Length: 177
View 1 (cartoon, rainbow, N blue to C red):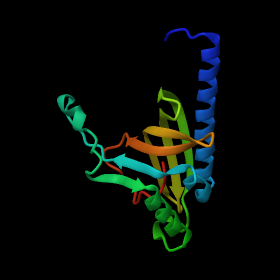
View 2: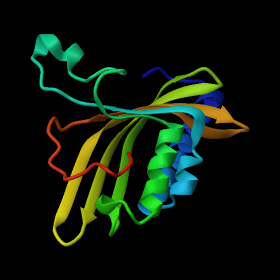
View 3: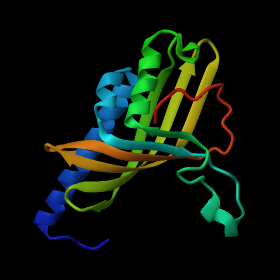
View 4: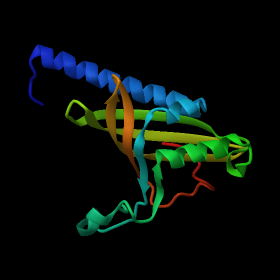
């Protein structure tokens, strides 16, 4: 790493803190089922994408994850996410009644780029879910987000979720990452 002048270092630390605080609060919203607050973090034109991971040889790693437009676990707009939340709130979503208990751990937050209006950030995650008496799931991976500044606040313009598992053994995938 190159050494930054003091003013740049302070600005970089403030930006890092802002992003980490944003992710910490977002995780709390999900774990506390404050879904209306969570969906408000997404820009109107947001995309939420979780490709399927396939096991590939070393020379084929560029096709390890499906691409947008191909099959995916999630390829949602903000409107589609909001519809999923409405369904969860009806009590008619059998896979979430009774609701899951989750814990979202977000680590290794890194700023990849920042042009002043939007920034790209990567982070690692561990999402732990328990449901009913014996259902327990753990998902690990990393996310790459485009965060947009709107009226001074960060909003999620896009989220790409890359899960480590190639086979998901959970009976459903109703949690958010």
